[in-house]
Image (cartoon, rainbow over all chains, first blue to last red; front, top):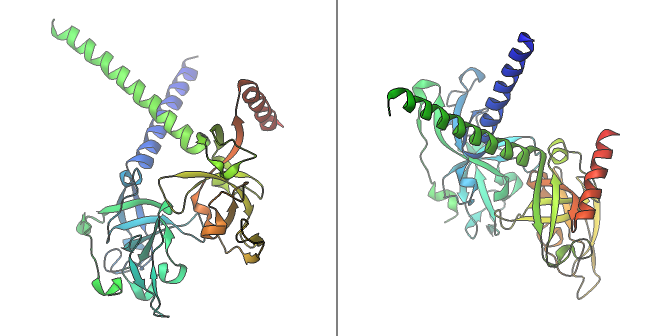
Length: 165
Length: 171
């Protein structure tokens, strides 16, 4: 009887911590690793999987879906819902953008945004799949939390030549 | 009041707070991972849901696992306004060839499109008054929120629905 009681208590404790953790990571903030070199000067400047950066992603912006130019966001890939990508917003609804290859000028439609990686040479982003709906955004990266020597706040960086004018 | 009374009071308060917090977290997890509800109103799904409003229940397991199929009614985050969740019917999955009437009010001109990878084609049941994939094209699968499995219009249909969902669950 004693062991059963003990097991029940342990299970209850794990369950409670599990749901509290899930709620916090869904609603407030979570920590995600960044893989690949598509955001290179900002994350993973040296490459290599041993030095993956971990970022703090806040979810409070999902209440209103209000973003600013230059925010680094985590979003579900429009071509595969299981993948998550991290890129920088460079244009919001109503902005004009010049597509790099065809040199067309297009407006971002209502409820969409244009995301581009900082390392434009090796990045799969809006230049290949077009504007993405803001509903795919899962959170906004605010801080680098690991490794310790690179710990710090992310700044909004806007490349003016990227805006098309 | 001496110290012992104070500490008992503090302990009691802490216990109650943590119980309420756990309960709210439990609600959030059930709402995000298992079931959710939504109010559907407006003319876009007319024969299925009424204009004045229906309460629907949706489960969120099958969208997470990718088990939704053609013909399912789904909750989807609107691509035009991310703050809104709309109800539409899934008409095509990725790779399907869809033929649709471009402007049903004025002409019966048809167009054919192949749904790209990772996208779905959604349409409202009332094709005359809906803004769906005919207007904004195929939408990414990641916007899907849940599959509607029950319309609550009165208590009897609600009980039936619960009964049948349990039946399917056990079969």
